[in-house]
Every structure is written in C-alpha cells, then in structure tokens.
Length: 309
Ligand code: 0GY
Image 1: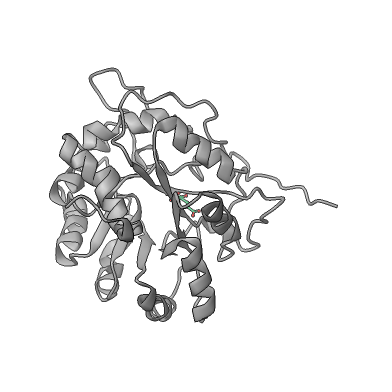
Image 2: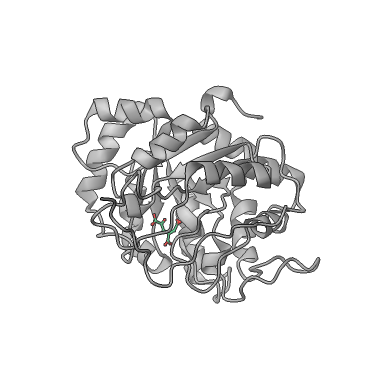
C-alpha cells in the first residue's frame, strides 16, 4: 500500500504558470540554485526532515528551465531529502549533461560513493546552518567531509543566516576549499546595505578570496514584497541594493538561481518569470550579466568546457 504523503500545513505549491520573462537571458545561462522534491512516491522524503513539501519533479524543473530560457541547472540537495541524494542524482542523470549537482553527505562517506556522485555530475556538498531546517552540523563533520571531497575538486555550499556569521566566520575561513554562500547569507534587508551587518558579510568575501555568493531569493528576504515589474521598480526592490552591491564588488564570484520550487514560503509564491526580470536590476550591464549567468557558473560547475576569459 502506498503511504499518503501530507504536505506541511501552509506549504505553498510552486507557481504553475510562470510569466515568460521580458529579460532575454544570455545564451548558455545557468540556473545555479534549484531543487527537486521527490516525487515522494518514488523518492521518499527523509525521516529526519523538518518539512514535507509538494512534489517537484525533474521533468517539471526541465520544463521551467526551457520556459525561462536557461540552458542548464545546478540542482542543490534539499534538506527534505536528508543525505539521500537519489532524487537529485536521478535528475542529473536524466539531464543529458545539462545539470550538475550539490549533494548532502555524511562524515565517513566512502571514496567509491563520492566517485559515483561525481560521475553523475555532483561537484559540491552542502552544509546547512539554518536551525529551522536541520540539526546544525559539527565542525568535525564538515572537516571530515572536506578531507574526503578535496581529491574530487569539489566545493562546499553553505547556508546560514546573517546573525550567525560572526560566530561561524573564523571556522568558514579555515576551510581550505571554495565556499559558495546561499542567498547572500540571508541579510536583513530592512537595514542599510552600507550598515555593519552586510559590511561584515562583504568583508568575509574580501577576506577569503574563494568565497562565492548566490545573489538569490529576493522573495525570501524581501519586506516590500513582489509587485510585478512596472518599468520603474524591480519586484522585491528592497533586496536589489544588496544583490547589486555583491555583483559589482565581486563580479567573478556571483551566481544566480531561481530557487524553484521555493521551499517553505508561506505568504506568497513567486512567479519565476518575474524573478528572471529582476536580473538586469542587479546586474546592470551585459558584461555583468554574462559573468553572473554564464561564465561564473560554467567555471565552477563545467570547468572542462572552459569559459570566456
Ligand atoms: C533554499 C531555502 C530553504 C530550504 C532549503 O534545503 C532546504 O530545505 O534550502 C529555506 O527554507 O530557506 O535554499 O531553497
């Protein structure tokens, strides 16, 4: 008998009919942060998960990719699947080389298991420090995994919230691999982008010169919310100065992604087409857009294909 999967109360399904973006993505653009959920009947959610999502399958992700005008995806393991990477790996294998992955692995993972993940297209591991999503990993866990993935040339994706950076910063700086920060380290966008909180994050990026940043998730960070583009303002306009600052200060270390299917949003679900239309507000020249959407993600996830210098 199939188990009935009940979504977390208040969970919003992803936007079924996104707008066709008005902004034309550069050729070869990569959606560098997105997930697959299940389908739960085929790839069960992890027993230790903190939420139960709706299904969001690989084919639905690939349809969104094509609709928005992206060429490739970076599929990031979501916490609802724990360290069971099968749904993500299945999507990588079905992508025909057009998706790479970021896995969650536990300390003690074997070289053979890592080699299998590498062969499927995994190029990084994710460590999550957001307390509502996971039980926080210990420094020893991350050090163990770092030692094991180093021979594969992978990097570490970290997800944390701004108030936790001061405590974590020295530890992160000590990691001898590139780090990729999810969602700009979740700044408080009601504060000034010139204030001490965000300055601390920018300083962290200046200090450790192989820290990359995903200028993603305005819908998660915004207080002003999602008015559609009206020709004057980007949607989620309070997030724009933060993202623009990172793009302009670190043009060769930024990535952009949809975050489809947008886990854990309870007040509104963004239209992915409008998210794409926000890009020219944060990367304001063709050169910055090319770096953000093509050259940077290609250098990190498809280095063997080269990138424009
Ligand atoms: C995100 C954000 C969230 C969740 C996850 O893996 C996850 O469960 O990443 C969140 O709730 O902030 O990156 O998509």
